[in-house]
Amino acid sequence: MNIRTIFAGACAALAFSTAGPTYAHDSEAQNVTKNFEAAIPNIPGKPLVAVEVDYAPGSASAPHTHAKSAYIYAYVISGTIESKVNDGETRIYRTGESWSERPGATHSISRNASKTEPAKLLAVFVLDTNDAPLTTPIK
Image (cartoon, rainbow, N blue to C red; front, side):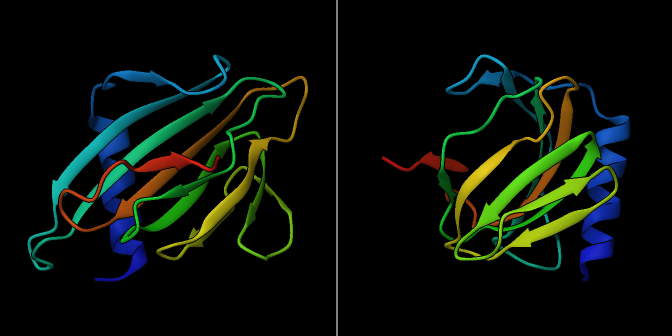
């Protein structure tokens, strides 16, 4: 199974699913909605979870890590997202651009790069069953 297959499945789930519960994070201007979760039949013990992150203009996530086993593919649905993972450079991703995060990565910057327009990000996780929570703020 390659990342295109995983991403296509996540996009289909996003297009056809009903919105799940919305979870407010540190900022009320950022919401995370789980759109899809399913076991991957040919990879026992590894579910796929897709979440949508909506950023209001100028809003940001607190620096964070993800579940220790999580491999993440992030895709900008709309707007511009500024991101920094581990010791990599700070980058701005625009609609249609993407990046990945390896297990154990630290996400020190994740925010809407615009002060006037909203932004939306799809994050697709492949992780060990029961490896939770998906996101943990860095203290």
